[in-house]
Image 1: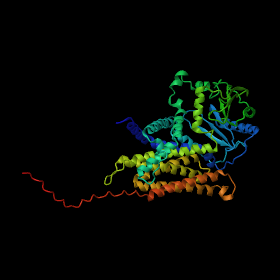
Image 2: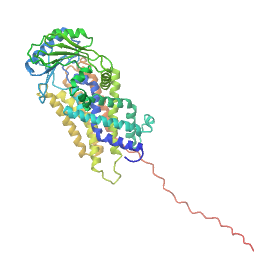
Image 3: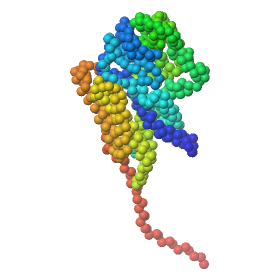
Image 4: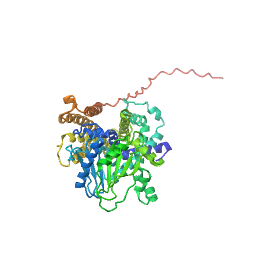
Length: 530
């Protein structure tokens, strides 16, 4: 970093953005899609039909089915998690972990019969959501990588603000008919400045949401490594009880559920059963978060043996904890209605465009002059640009297609969907290495367009009650397919633009014409003096 402060900031902005640009693009794309995570999950499980809210008595009966199944298949687990039926997910969602290092158990049950549900096995929108902050890596490593990239992103944003002296003028400047580098720079500036408050907010809150994970030393020192005490004092969880190591039968959960539903206006979201079969068993009823910025779930803890209420957690967060939950709420936007969620989504799209144009700008600024050969680093960056900007959307489209075309009863079906996702992404990243740069862009963007259309075709052909076939059915399918067709059109237009692009011709410099010789006038002889 040499020169003035602004030049140093420009250097920092360029290289910080390039080093993590491809990872940031993946984080932005999957995070933006996660604003519609419930809708994606429901689209990927077309067997679900939206139902009316379940009555308390029916919830109690469904919970008894869940406990019977868990007692038979997860008797050694210390904690059971029971997701209760919701209008958009009318099944029992059971999860348990027996011991560290073992694959956790997960199953969906029919709430009326207690038998395993026949819906297709898929992670749905949860895969994109978890990829957003774990990159499908072990949680420890994935969250550290994402956190480091988010911190570098914050550095890139601040240095970018310092670098652009004309930041408000850039808001209104886009010269698409100029040289490629100028057009890409204008696109980078417009998408960065237009949603700048969102970019800063989403990056900062993303770091804060996992702050205790990145910087656990304060909690470890103050609470001597007992993080549960910290979470309890912050009013985030109910007070945990150690096991009594004395066997005791779990009380019927039907009456507990009915009491919980009667105590709160929010829908009951899930039950957490800690130390089942122990005298100190605890049943925690967790409700949906109230509407508002703060991301907090009211909770009621019951004694698992007697059924008595032990504790009620209903707000009352301390200032630091309240600030944290507000930051989390801002980042996840669960409070947003239909219109505001669309605004968040469009700002996320601009974030994707900002990162994509930024990494492309680096390669455009280093294009070789006529007659020179591109160096290896440039070719690698160009291939990674295509593999990320076109490859990731192509992989997501293949993920959706696999959801429709893989057999419903296939063993390990959700793992096969993920394998298709990464397989398609790897192919899309390798092909640009052996193709000319311009053709690689055209082929990559055109492939995304075709795959998006294929998603719609697979949806209509495989879903018998699709609205476009029978005129009824869930309108979600129409909205989802419409969004995929819009993406297909955008990628097709981009591919066509690149294919037909011609650099503007520079006006030829006028050749200087030598002046024609002119006869100099005869000089009058100077007078002589005697």
